[in-house]
Image (cartoon, rainbow, N blue to C red; front, top):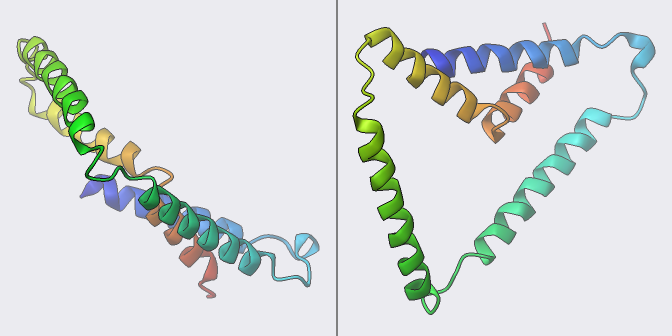
Length: 122
């Protein structure tokens, strides 16, 4: 929860910085709105393209064999790393925090939070 909270705070701060652009750099064109529409269209079309690219049931058997190979490889890696257990609670918390924080970095929700932070007028 701390990682997500920090990511939200960072996103809002970035949005507020974008909002406070000096007047001499602002134009009469609503560039922010155009950028928001362009990003929305881009991510929408990208999501649709990714959905179309998903394999059909016909290719499912071929993929299952490669996935089972990946699963076996992952299980071997876990067994190798099991001997190197993390015993410190602080180390476990740090690994969890950093995993969530960096996984969310650049995510669409972060970009949406930046846009919301920039749209808020005090």
